[in-house]
Image (cartoon, rainbow, N blue to C red):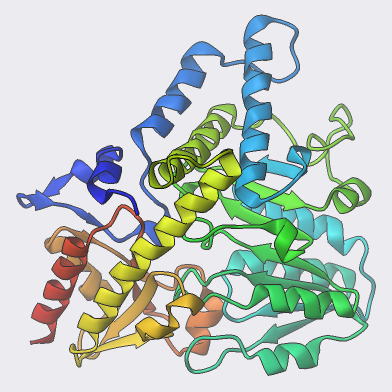
Length: 412
């Protein structure tokens, strides 16, 4: 395990005070805070090697070397063997729209696409629109009352006509972790491709695209302590074969054929530093670990244990607060099937009012549907949504207790 106070000292935002007390950041599901070293890496790039790609002069060469290392670092983060299959872009949504446009060129009328009602809309609407353009049929897999996927329905939808299954690794609204490895296997048996949205999974647990055997995966660095940069990974044979929408001078080799336009180089420098931050966290937990991948595995093992403790404390306290409803898996024994992200509602106060009262106590939390629109609709929570509480590895037991105290005052 790591020393959480040493971790917190690396995040300048956590020193913020409100009303004479430290601010509590439970807004991580919409974007984590960043270590100082990440901001310094962004600044250092801008000040020391700010140049475009492909020049023969010194700063361009330095910039390209840094970008090459960023591809290698994110490949390690994702468990990928080929750094050139790591694609950077503005955000996961934009990258997914680009891929969906390309994939739809391979679909025909009568083909079928599967999406779920548990997902962020960025892993739903791009596929729905692409299917519409191709004349393909879209199946929306439903959820059970505990906010887990209806796996029986999903299996029943798979057939030789299925071309793609788009699935989230973890719900950004209620924290559910899907059995995605099993679903990948089901999809491949009928010849379908699988796209995994790991945006919300990435700050909480280790990603391993080789082990998972998926075809595509996307995530976003602003969720795992980096800047606002999106990441797409795909199998080399697919990324090379699929039609890429790009300008004529752009290269046809990976990764350039998918990285259209001038990239956010300073942001990518920050992504590299975010991965190194996580690796160093792992080295602190296991000082004799060898290699960046092993260090990342050690970091995520420690992160998962720390967040499990926070979540267990929260769930135990929440069980005594009768006006509060938790949406999703609600016991510590079910933590293996969820990450430490929780959506709640109050019997008498709207989500916006709960979020305001938390803010008055210096506790930051989101309210709304969090772009998980299909889920919010399925739960009957539109238009008000829910209040979302998210724990990350820089949060503490004392902060969880402050939250429980604030919720208890709203419940009396």
